[in-house]
Length: 271
Image (cartoon, rainbow, N blue to C red; front, side, top):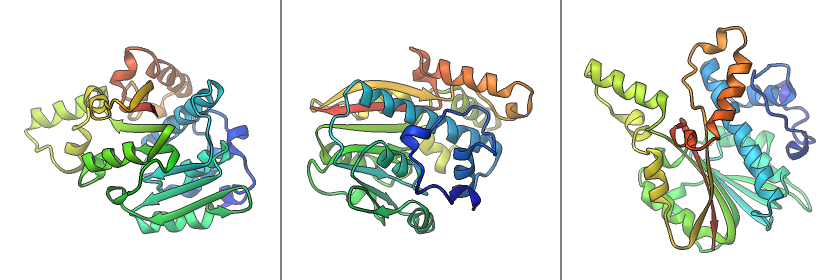
Protein backbone atom coordinates (compact mmCIF):
# COMPACT_ATOMS: atom_id res chain seq x y z
CA UNK A 1 0.00 0.00 0.00
CA UNK A 2 2.46 2.57 -1.21
CA UNK A 3 -0.11 5.35 -1.12
CA UNK A 4 -0.41 5.05 2.67
CA UNK A 5 3.23 5.34 3.66
CA UNK A 6 3.08 9.12 4.20
CA UNK A 7 -0.52 9.37 5.40
CA UNK A 8 0.35 10.04 9.04
CA UNK A 9 2.62 12.95 8.08
CA UNK A 10 0.18 14.43 5.57
CA UNK A 11 -2.00 17.37 6.61
CA UNK A 12 -5.06 17.10 4.38
CA UNK A 13 -6.45 20.44 5.54
CA UNK A 14 -3.45 22.15 3.94
CA UNK A 15 -2.52 19.73 1.18
CA UNK A 16 -5.88 18.62 -0.21
CA UNK A 17 -6.60 19.59 -3.81
CA UNK A 18 -9.88 18.88 -5.59
CA UNK A 19 -9.57 16.24 -8.29
CA UNK A 20 -11.96 15.64 -11.17
CA UNK A 21 -10.03 12.96 -13.04
CA UNK A 22 -9.07 10.63 -10.14
CA UNK A 23 -5.54 10.44 -11.49
CA UNK A 24 -3.98 7.34 -9.89
CA UNK A 25 -0.65 9.20 -9.62
CA UNK A 26 -2.13 12.07 -7.61
CA UNK A 27 -0.98 11.68 -3.95
CA UNK A 28 -4.38 11.72 -2.29
CA UNK A 29 -5.93 9.45 -4.91
CA UNK A 30 -3.13 6.99 -4.21
CA UNK A 31 -4.20 7.01 -0.57
CA UNK A 32 -7.85 6.42 -1.47
CA UNK A 33 -6.98 3.62 -3.90
CA UNK A 34 -4.92 1.95 -1.17
CA UNK A 35 -7.62 2.24 1.49
CA UNK A 36 -10.76 1.42 -0.47
CA UNK A 37 -11.66 -1.55 -2.59
CA UNK A 38 -13.50 0.31 -5.32
CA UNK A 39 -15.93 -1.94 -7.15
CA UNK A 40 -15.70 -0.02 -10.40
CA UNK A 41 -14.48 3.36 -11.75
CA UNK A 42 -17.92 4.90 -11.19
CA UNK A 43 -17.73 4.26 -7.44
CA UNK A 44 -14.25 5.73 -7.40
CA UNK A 45 -15.36 8.96 -9.09
CA UNK A 46 -18.47 9.38 -6.95
CA UNK A 47 -16.50 8.90 -3.74
CA UNK A 48 -13.94 11.52 -4.74
CA UNK A 49 -16.70 13.99 -5.65
CA UNK A 50 -18.21 13.62 -2.20
CA UNK A 51 -14.82 14.17 -0.57
CA UNK A 52 -14.23 17.23 -2.77
CA UNK A 53 -17.49 18.69 -1.50
CA UNK A 54 -16.89 17.77 2.14
CA UNK A 55 -13.49 19.48 2.15
CA UNK A 56 -14.96 22.58 0.49
CA UNK A 57 -17.74 22.72 3.08
CA UNK A 58 -15.31 22.37 5.99
CA UNK A 59 -13.13 25.17 4.65
CA UNK A 60 -16.14 27.44 4.15
CA UNK A 61 -17.63 26.68 7.58
CA UNK A 62 -14.34 27.41 9.33
CA UNK A 63 -13.65 30.55 7.29
CA UNK A 64 -17.13 31.91 8.02
CA UNK A 65 -16.75 30.97 11.71
CA UNK A 66 -19.74 28.68 11.68
CA UNK A 67 -17.41 26.11 13.23
CA UNK A 68 -15.68 27.72 16.19
CA UNK A 69 -15.06 24.87 18.66
CA UNK A 70 -12.60 22.10 17.83
CA UNK A 71 -12.47 19.90 20.93
CA UNK A 72 -14.41 16.79 19.91
CA UNK A 73 -15.85 15.21 16.78
CA UNK A 74 -17.48 11.94 15.77
CA UNK A 75 -17.50 10.26 12.37
CA UNK A 76 -20.56 8.01 12.27
CA UNK A 77 -20.04 5.17 9.81
CA UNK A 78 -16.33 5.93 9.51
CA UNK A 79 -15.52 3.11 7.07
CA UNK A 80 -11.72 3.05 6.50
CA UNK A 81 -11.21 6.32 8.35
CA UNK A 82 -10.29 8.86 5.68
CA UNK A 83 -13.03 11.31 6.74
CA UNK A 84 -11.86 11.00 10.35
CA UNK A 85 -8.36 11.91 9.16
CA UNK A 86 -9.75 14.93 7.30
CA UNK A 87 -11.72 16.09 10.35
CA UNK A 88 -8.63 15.76 12.56
CA UNK A 89 -6.41 17.64 10.11
CA UNK A 90 -8.91 20.50 10.09
CA UNK A 91 -8.13 21.03 13.75
CA UNK A 92 -10.36 18.80 15.89
CA UNK A 93 -8.40 17.53 18.90
CA UNK A 94 -10.27 14.28 19.48
CA UNK A 95 -12.02 12.38 16.70
CA UNK A 96 -14.02 9.23 17.33
CA UNK A 97 -14.83 7.02 14.37
CA UNK A 98 -17.51 4.37 14.74
CA UNK A 99 -18.67 1.61 12.40
CA UNK A 100 -20.14 -1.88 12.65
CA UNK A 101 -17.87 -3.41 10.01
CA UNK A 102 -14.80 -4.72 11.83
CA UNK A 103 -12.62 -5.37 8.74
CA UNK A 104 -13.02 -1.70 7.78
CA UNK A 105 -12.14 -0.65 11.32
CA UNK A 106 -9.03 -2.83 11.19
CA UNK A 107 -7.89 -0.85 8.13
CA UNK A 108 -8.67 2.44 9.88
CA UNK A 109 -6.82 1.43 13.04
CA UNK A 110 -3.78 0.31 11.07
CA UNK A 111 -3.48 3.37 8.84
CA UNK A 112 -5.33 6.32 10.39
CA UNK A 113 -5.59 5.95 14.18
CA UNK A 114 -3.26 8.21 16.14
CA UNK A 115 -2.79 9.28 19.73
CA UNK A 116 -0.43 12.10 20.66
CA UNK A 117 -0.40 15.05 23.00
CA UNK A 118 -2.54 17.30 20.85
CA UNK A 119 -4.14 14.88 18.39
CA UNK A 120 -6.27 11.78 18.84
CA UNK A 121 -8.16 9.63 16.32
CA UNK A 122 -9.74 6.46 17.69
CA UNK A 123 -11.95 3.85 16.04
CA UNK A 124 -14.38 1.40 17.56
CA UNK A 125 -17.01 -1.11 16.60
CA UNK A 126 -20.17 0.66 17.69
CA UNK A 127 -23.76 0.92 16.47
CA UNK A 128 -25.03 4.48 15.93
CA UNK A 129 -28.42 3.40 17.29
CA UNK A 130 -26.77 2.98 20.71
CA UNK A 131 -25.17 6.42 20.97
CA UNK A 132 -25.93 7.91 24.38
CA UNK A 133 -25.31 11.15 26.21
CA UNK A 134 -26.13 14.80 25.63
CA UNK A 135 -24.03 17.53 24.06
CA UNK A 136 -20.88 15.49 23.57
CA UNK A 137 -19.50 16.64 20.21
CA UNK A 138 -18.58 19.92 18.54
CA UNK A 139 -18.79 18.30 15.12
CA UNK A 140 -20.65 15.31 13.70
CA UNK A 141 -20.26 13.71 10.30
CA UNK A 142 -22.75 11.10 9.14
CA UNK A 143 -22.41 10.42 5.43
CA UNK A 144 -24.46 7.78 3.61
CA UNK A 145 -25.14 5.86 6.83
CA UNK A 146 -28.68 6.56 8.06
CA UNK A 147 -30.33 4.72 5.17
CA UNK A 148 -28.45 1.53 6.11
CA UNK A 149 -29.54 1.41 9.75
CA UNK A 150 -32.37 -0.67 11.20
CA UNK A 151 -33.83 2.31 13.07
CA UNK A 152 -33.04 5.51 11.12
CA UNK A 153 -35.26 7.71 13.29
CA UNK A 154 -33.38 6.64 16.41
CA UNK A 155 -30.04 7.44 14.78
CA UNK A 156 -31.35 10.87 13.77
CA UNK A 157 -32.58 11.52 17.33
CA UNK A 158 -29.17 10.47 18.67
CA UNK A 159 -27.37 12.87 16.33
CA UNK A 160 -29.54 15.76 17.46
CA UNK A 161 -28.97 14.92 21.12
CA UNK A 162 -25.20 14.32 21.17
CA UNK A 163 -24.39 17.53 19.26
CA UNK A 164 -23.23 20.31 21.56
CA UNK A 165 -24.94 23.71 21.53
CA UNK A 166 -23.04 25.68 18.91
CA UNK A 167 -21.87 22.43 17.34
CA UNK A 168 -22.15 21.59 13.64
CA UNK A 169 -23.37 18.42 11.95
CA UNK A 170 -22.83 17.45 8.30
CA UNK A 171 -25.35 14.85 7.19
CA UNK A 172 -25.62 13.25 3.76
CA UNK A 173 -28.31 10.97 2.40
CA UNK A 174 -29.01 9.38 -0.99
CA UNK A 175 -31.59 11.48 -2.82
CA UNK A 176 -34.54 9.70 -4.43
CA UNK A 177 -35.23 12.88 -6.44
CA UNK A 178 -31.91 12.64 -8.27
CA UNK A 179 -31.62 11.64 -11.91
CA UNK A 180 -29.65 8.43 -11.18
CA UNK A 181 -32.18 7.15 -8.65
CA UNK A 182 -35.23 8.26 -10.64
CA UNK A 183 -33.83 6.43 -13.66
CA UNK A 184 -33.25 3.32 -11.57
CA UNK A 185 -36.77 3.52 -10.13
CA UNK A 186 -38.29 3.91 -13.59
CA UNK A 187 -36.27 0.99 -14.94
CA UNK A 188 -37.56 -1.27 -12.17
CA UNK A 189 -41.14 -0.17 -12.75
CA UNK A 190 -40.97 -0.76 -16.51
CA UNK A 191 -39.40 -4.17 -16.01
CA UNK A 192 -41.73 -4.94 -13.10
CA UNK A 193 -38.79 -5.74 -10.89
CA UNK A 194 -39.26 -5.49 -7.12
CA UNK A 195 -37.75 -2.51 -5.32
CA UNK A 196 -36.36 -3.93 -2.12
CA UNK A 197 -33.27 -4.21 0.02
CA UNK A 198 -30.63 -1.51 -0.37
CA UNK A 199 -32.35 0.10 -3.35
CA UNK A 200 -35.55 0.55 -1.37
CA UNK A 201 -33.54 2.18 1.42
CA UNK A 202 -31.82 4.53 -1.03
CA UNK A 203 -35.14 5.54 -2.55
CA UNK A 204 -36.63 6.39 0.85
CA UNK A 205 -34.98 9.80 1.25
CA UNK A 206 -35.87 12.43 -1.32
CA UNK A 207 -34.20 15.71 -0.40
CA UNK A 208 -37.41 17.27 0.91
CA UNK A 209 -37.92 14.33 3.30
CA UNK A 210 -34.30 14.47 4.46
CA UNK A 211 -34.78 18.12 5.40
CA UNK A 212 -38.04 17.32 7.16
CA UNK A 213 -36.43 14.55 9.23
CA UNK A 214 -33.91 16.98 10.65
CA UNK A 215 -36.32 19.83 11.21
CA UNK A 216 -35.99 20.72 14.88
CA UNK A 217 -36.36 23.98 16.85
CA UNK A 218 -32.90 23.40 18.30
CA UNK A 219 -31.26 23.07 14.87
CA UNK A 220 -30.70 25.72 12.24
CA UNK A 221 -29.95 24.77 8.64
CA UNK A 222 -26.69 26.48 7.70
CA UNK A 223 -26.60 25.28 4.11
CA UNK A 224 -27.57 22.45 1.80
CA UNK A 225 -25.53 21.18 -1.09
CA UNK A 226 -25.02 18.08 -3.17
CA UNK A 227 -22.79 15.93 -5.35
CA UNK A 228 -23.48 14.20 -8.67
CA UNK A 229 -26.26 16.03 -10.44
CA UNK A 230 -25.80 14.20 -13.72
CA UNK A 231 -25.73 10.52 -14.50
CA UNK A 232 -22.17 9.52 -15.33
CA UNK A 233 -21.99 5.76 -15.72
CA UNK A 234 -19.46 4.87 -18.46
CA UNK A 235 -18.82 8.56 -19.19
CA UNK A 236 -15.41 8.29 -17.55
CA UNK A 237 -14.27 6.51 -20.72
CA UNK A 238 -14.87 9.48 -23.00
CA UNK A 239 -12.24 12.14 -23.82
CA UNK A 240 -12.65 15.30 -21.79
CA UNK A 241 -14.38 13.55 -18.91
CA UNK A 242 -12.61 15.67 -16.22
CA UNK A 243 -14.21 18.78 -17.77
CA UNK A 244 -17.64 17.16 -17.55
CA UNK A 245 -16.90 16.08 -13.99
CA UNK A 246 -15.89 19.62 -13.00
CA UNK A 247 -19.13 21.00 -14.46
CA UNK A 248 -21.05 18.29 -12.63
CA UNK A 249 -19.45 19.41 -9.36
CA UNK A 250 -20.14 23.09 -10.02
CA UNK A 251 -23.80 22.73 -11.03
CA UNK A 252 -24.48 20.30 -8.18
CA UNK A 253 -23.87 23.11 -5.69
CA UNK A 254 -26.26 25.60 -7.27
CA UNK A 255 -29.83 26.40 -6.25
CA UNK A 256 -32.19 24.71 -7.02
CA UNK A 257 -30.13 21.98 -8.72
CA UNK A 258 -28.57 20.85 -5.45
CA UNK A 259 -31.95 19.44 -4.37
CA UNK A 260 -31.76 16.98 -7.28
CA UNK A 261 -28.24 15.63 -6.69
CA UNK A 262 -27.60 11.97 -5.97
CA UNK A 263 -25.86 12.69 -2.66
CA UNK A 264 -27.68 15.39 -0.70
CA UNK A 265 -25.65 17.28 1.93
CA UNK A 266 -27.17 19.14 4.90
CA UNK A 267 -25.24 21.27 7.39
CA UNK A 268 -26.88 22.05 10.71
CA UNK A 269 -25.81 24.11 13.72
CA UNK A 270 -27.30 23.50 17.15
CA UNK A 271 -28.69 26.57 18.86
